[in-house]
Amino acid sequence: MQPIAAPLLQWFDANKRLLPFRQEPSAYHIWVSEIMLQQTRVAAAIPYYERFIAALPDPAALAACEPDALRKLWQGLGYYNRVNNMQKAARIVCEQYGGDLPADYDALRSLPGIGDYTAGAASIAFGIPVPAVDGNVLRVFARLYNDDADVMAPATKKAFTVRVLDQMPKATPGPYNEALMELGALVCIPGTPHCEECPLADLCRGYAAGRADPLPVKPAPKAKGKVPVTVALIESEQGLLLQRRPARGLLAGLWQPAAWEKALTRDELTAALAGIGVQAALDEPLPPAKHVFTHKIWELGGWKGTAPACVLPDGYVWAAPEDLAEVYPVPNAFGAYVKAK
Ligand code: SF4
Image (cartoon, rainbow, N blue to C red):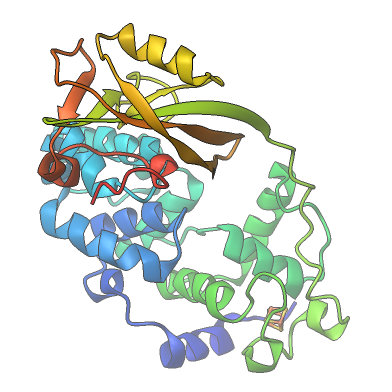
């Protein structure tokens, strides 16, 4: 393969998007943006990014943030363990590195929630010549080399990482990494790539072979188990009944309408609510909804109703509308029933 850096960087200079995290590309800004972009499209992530950075402008602010406030800032992005890990990492950064992310790949890589890719991306800020290989870059390299190895296999990722590094210009590793990501996001996109606009079209073996579309090769996704969830959307004069999820596991520590991970009849749901002291009248079935996690699918349903306000056990609250909007982070999984902001 001939060198790709020159045409790639020339294209990047002329075509890169003016994104907020490119305006002051500190390691902290890149870190926050990359964690958000692992799960969200750029356009959707920008308002979250701006709000997050305004509230928590540096690792010290992130380290000190109260957990519910942190999850509230993340509400809507999902994968809450990622922001929990960011906070753990920020605390280590404050304790061990004086509040600034370390300018060292291995030190970055050792922080909670920072893998090879994120450490590589954060290294952009320091000009460290390490690769940042994400799904975009794997797709570009599978097509460039017309390689139909399974890109989800660790051995393939390792081999592709060597190619990314071989092609890296030593003087401009950061722009090269960014340019590869940008090419994957804008031109060498999933599905049918825009090869006619690509600065690497003359070098691309996949394009020459007419095989760009089916690459990269990935294993068929595993079937996800379906889990019924019965939701009780109960209002009293003090607000909506919310329940805190367990401190560990799926959606740890977040708030949700009272819900049970099983199919309950109306009578069983009434009895379950009575078990926490809520004497509810369930008068309207909730429309069925679905939420897809990486490993399972929730099939949601349940009942809407009212109840007299009462003293609730630990882990439950009556949330007034303003607190629902400002205080309690409610996951998107319940978005069909609760608009929490
Ligand atoms: Fe991707 Fe097409 Fe460019 Fe090859 S020519 S890198 S397939 S966009």
